[in-house]
Length: 216
Image (tube, rainbow, N blue to C red; front, top):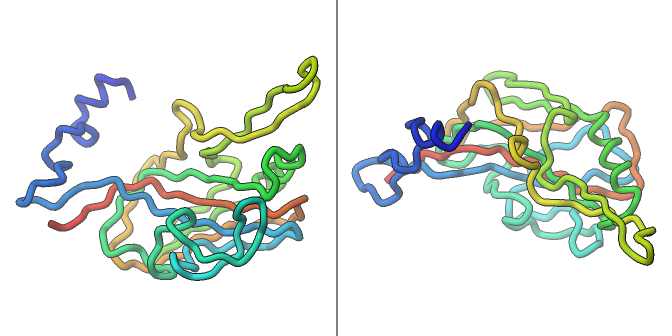
């Protein structure tokens, strides 16, 4: 969407009164993503279940280059109840994935990410219906790889990650947005065909990009 189109579209116009955050006469419309993080073990697994371990609970995740049992914080999730949406309505417009590798910069990381991405499919359901299945191959990543050369004669390859998926691919935008009602039950899984093994554990994050309607 071009800049002029953005400003002319009332649904996105930041000056639209519906988006005022201090208007006591109307509910507030705020940006309210839903996100969670789950670890994919090196040995592989058939299914990863997201949004089941809320903030404040213990999970095995990567911290400072080590995989261990930690207490989930806002770094990892903003879900307060397992499998239950927050107490505000969310209109979900898209989603994006993140990958956090056990050993940043390792030359095996792209291979591990390819193995997961090539064999994974997302399954999302609410308590009332199946919403969609999507292959991981179709979902943009917020931290794609960057590759360069360093050292004498630039002969040493360096692999790292970069925040943001680039212009126009920052998320998978749903052709038809959908709504999660307040306190609605839902499940989100990533199924891995063949339970493929990887070289090192990888933390996978999913973030639903969404608007929240917050009461006054």
